Length: 533
Image (cartoon, rainbow, N blue to C red):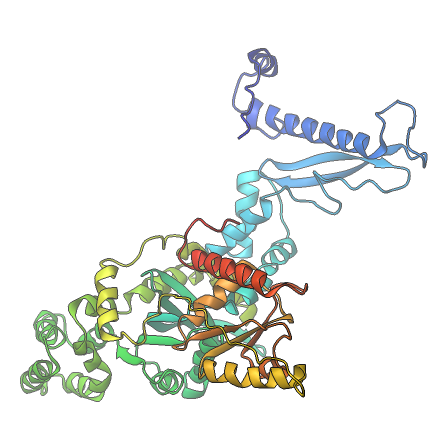
């Protein structure tokens, strides 16, 4: 680690010799701004000297005769306000400044400030006013839009990124916002999915925009999660999303759909006056805190007898949704506490509403996605710890769903002896016989054939694939060919063709490299320090 040298006191005293008030240091024409300008211009001159091979006023030493040719001026925007800078030029126009690249008009980090302000829900006008007040810098709406538009590619990549193979719990909900569409302002729903991963940490899985809920839309969302690597969901917690239960059961038939209990209670109390709310809430609590489904249904019947005449919609709602409520009673307390409510996603929705409250409407869907993505990145920075008592809940999941839990990786080496070459047996015949025995050994495994013509991946990409393999519920068979390689039919029908190298490697070396890479990928998945970026 490099230790910075302290500035000599004599230098500091000299710089501050005329200092009388703060403005002399940090004001519009203060020392810091002057010093920044001087240092930047001196550094640019040093870059020019390196480019030409000779200093100012020295003989030309380069073969082309290139030399300095005056200066150009540009104004940089930054935290110090607007700073005019003189950029040295050369006769050939070949000088490319590194400190301030061509066409750069904003100091490094200034764009990040614009994005940070935008992600907190500030409008373009508010950002303009803030930057003017804080830094004395005028920024056009076009500039702000261009800076924030650069996030769009990030949004696309984020929305299509690979996901974990298994999420024990997934929460789904929506928030309504106004968006301009075909010249009219329309209310649109932004659907949000948050998963609880195997480490017990929250993770935003995706955002989707649609005008109406429905089974077709939700089937597309759930299918997208499947295509991005999610092989299984134990419990999906929702707040009465139309068409969602049918969609998730079509893609994940083993997933349990749990209606949010808290939302049921809130919706029920909307029918009750303030003088009776505590009494009704107490009787509802007896239902959802019951030990078993039978006991809960008994309390529901008692609730009906007591309150049906006064508040008939409440009992009707609970009866109509009973099939989506009762899965709750199948789980032990550790899991109940997690699925009791969609508060994990409700808190996110609350934060999103804060960043949209100052906006009457969004100009388009892209602007909406851009803001929500940036806001979610800020929100998720706080998700550094697993859910409370997650280990207890994970143990319960392991007991209840042993066959669906991601499996630990273990390696078994199976050698398929090749046929002996004899009269009438060429390499093709030997390969065909070998291929038959290989396929018999693989059975219904997920088959990966190693071949130099296959796909090449990084170790991190391999770790992502291995994470998916662990959740598919099948053994993974990695095939290494013998002296004659693998039969074409095996490579054609393999689930994945993988190349360790474009070089043809000896069989024994392939074994070593393969084992080492599998171990390294496993280390990445389990956050061991064996692999370092």
